[in-house]
Image (cartoon, rainbow, N blue to C red; front, side, top):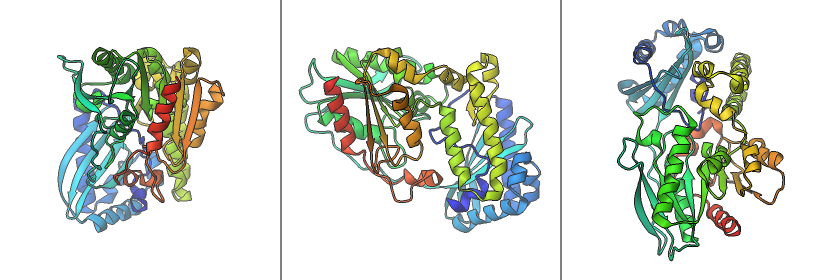
Length: 440
């Protein structure tokens, strides 16, 4: 990862994925053309033409020589550029991603623009084909049923209901809520399928589940601009389908990552009996992004840090104002590249307070090798909620953000590689969830 870091300057990385938002066709065309022009200049070795388009922060951090050295390191590893396989732009975040084919592999070239049309960030990284996930057979006696959410509408979502052996009126069920960004029902990340693993392990322990494709995965053509559209509506529909299919009387929500952050709100809004928050935190989403950026900057050369820290501070100040912004102001704002309209809804939600007032039980789980959600962020649950018997906290040494064994040297600087190796969710996680559900 270090050989790519020179071109990662000023890129605000949100590791939990992006948001599918409405785009302006005119702006998209302009950004795509600008990205292709910059790429052509890089290929021709005209780095001055590219740096001339940098904003003040980029210009202070990345010189023409640094840009040239970074590009040469890309070519040394992957060979020359042989073509462009895809170009995707997002008007809301003013970013463009260009997928490149090289002689010995592929890369993604990303640019983000400020409101004046100058290059505010640039990033390039190799793209590797994700290895096949480990195959798993259904546990003995478990039945899988295909289900459809929003059946007969343009928002249809495919899902799978797992029925444990001898399922009956007392069987408990969970609905699985994804982290941010597009994701299938297994929450496939690299060579891993954490939701499939968790659902199978729970089913073997007598707990049923329903998991489904996220709307941003199944319908990227549909704008999703609010938590209601991305989370509340699909999860409420999943709970309805689950109860209709099983007559279940005990239903819980298990949310992961951003889904874990929103677990108390979703439990209350959708009517679950309790919640399991995996790798969640009562911090705001932009606060997590801020912490991730600071970790990346801390690993950069000292002379580059000041300019980047200044930019992070400017984004942090916008984040602190989100709850007071009008809807119109939020719609015109981004914080760490995320829509202010989306974040302003989250800013009005005090997840810990919602959990306290709900009267319902919650289980909070975290892997101690999680480099996306820090110990401080996870411990904020207990600091806010205390040791009330309704709240249970579990941590797992050596497990990462996916509750899988972490690799040696895994960190935010090699996040992509850290999730590529096929692994499985540690079985203890499902055992703790099933035991907790049996008591609540």
